[in-house]
Every structure is written in structure tokens, then in C-alpha cells.
Length: 120
Image (cartoon, rainbow, N blue to C red; front, side, top):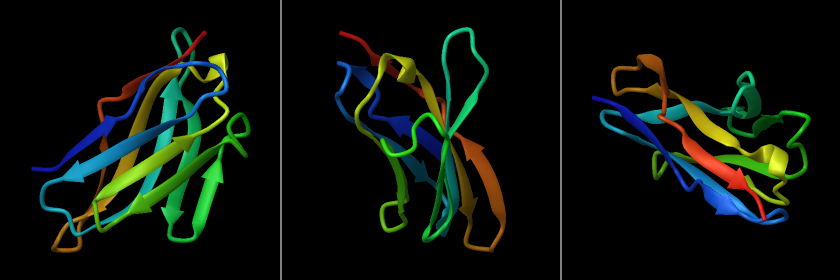
């Protein structure tokens, strides 16, 4: 059975940094793609960043230049490095991982989310 778990959230002061992790476990051959989304209280889910394939990344306008997405297939883990955090970045961050199993089948999995709070 496949699981995807986010970690690394917490409380940070404005201007600070956090690194979120999205770890996949189970019968996984590779992480083919990954994306991060966030949802603030009372707001719609917002696209944050995507890693659709090696060498290609995409970012939402509100985080461009501050956040960096990466994937380490040796560790079955993706990351979201968040720098220069602002109070507006406060939200629950969730990852969507496109995982390939040993038979070549690909499925998308969501983690449970991790809370990021930016406040002084």
C-alpha cells in the first residue's frame, strides 16, 4: 500500500524559511511528478509549485523567486524550500505525487497536509 506524508510545517516568523517534505512509501519505483498546493482558512486551494518532470519546474506567481520545488528519487521524497516567508503564506500545504510502481502503472496520491503559519 502506498502512502504519501508531508512534514516540516510549523510556526515561523516573517522573513524566515521552512523546508517541507513529501515522502512516499510502499511499492514505488519512481516519483514521476510532484506538485504542491496550499489552502488558507476560508480561501480556495491555490497552486504553489510543480515538478512535472526532471529539469522542469513551475511556480505560482505569489511564490515565484521565493520557493523551490525538488524531487530526490533516491529517497522517494520531494521537497518545497520556502524562503522569505510572509504572513500571506500561512496555509495548509499539501503535496500531490504521481508515483510509478514496479509494473509501470502510474497513480496520483495526496498527502494529508501540513500547517505552515507565518507570524511574529
